[in-house]
Length: 222
Length: 222
DNA sequence: ATCCGCCTCCGCCGCACGGGGGAGAACGCG
DNA sequence: CGCGTTCTCCCCCGTGCGGCGGAGGCGGAT
Image (cartoon, rainbow over the protein chains, first blue to last red):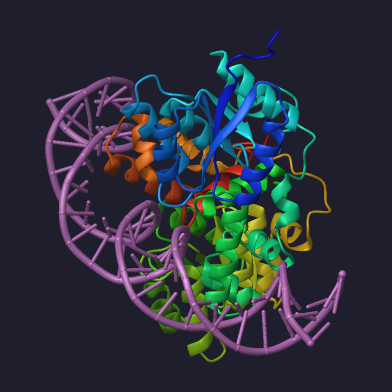
């Protein structure tokens, strides 16, 4: 009669507290799923997982000290009977998809996924299945599917006006100094905005930010 | 009765000899146009122009020592009654368009332009008019015109197979080291290919190369 | 048989970039 | 009136990147 004698034990690793809380809230509300720990950095994730031995880890790619990909590698390499790791990121990107899978991740999920998808994902990987967010699959399989209707990922809304300006100029191929000149601000300011754009888009460098801008429809070719 | 008592004197500055020869061939065939000199570097361009005092300069953006933009600035800044300078490049790019105009260029032309357009351009600027290649104008005016049908600029054909692979990986946001890993070659090799891609696309850095890839349709979003 | 294009790889070098801090001013909002 | 957000700017530091030049091997074209 017990719904689940051994609930799925989950660890959430993300540098943003809000995200962790949100994920925890969603998962704790579910029957048979239990968030047993959190981590704010890649290094923390490794030690927490080592200590708590969860069944599933939700791993952000972008974290201080050690990124999620490397944390995944370390966990899988150093632990016997390691947990299933679902890599969570803000936008779909070939590099992350490939690297996550290469690192041995069991799944790949976008932060903009619905709560239901998240729960589904945890249950799936806990059963030993793998999953890929549809869009990621499309990316891997090679663009034969129809164009998605999402012109505006979550991060676009989070960009401030100035940051949007900067991203547009980045996508025009300008350097930080040129952006500063175009906006009539100091180079340091341009750098600050660029850094903010990188953080919010989840990009590692300006090139990935520009890719994200194209892929999200923030800017369009031609 | 003399067709043109004082023909338009032109200097061609481009680091590729073939391009120089081609431009010279096209222009020399025209009545009233005379190619009086060539330059293979930005520095050469400055001195040649200083010495020959042409009416028009066809200036490549990408050249050794000093790029075409800076050479343009120097010529316009240091010469009295300077020549009209038409900046020539391989692909349309916001940064180059803006910079060229900001540097005081009288016109902006793509290398893929037809011979007739080139001649027209020289005649136009010689008369004191300015010109912008249609596509460049569209870029500046802000994409309200219809999509161009050019899915494949000249440089795409010039990319070798390996270079195309590398560009695709660049457009996936990978670093040189990651590209090397993915292609199972040494980092130095990846760098070489990246450099070749930058040269052939006329890009200054990997970000501009990725932009070119998107804008040309070499890769498509979604 | 020779030449040329492509792929592979090596070094050196300078710089723009990105990470990680911190700090002050203006503004709107509650 | 505080408070949060945004925009502005500063420091230091490590490094990925791009410029430059060279080199060898290999296969196809002539």
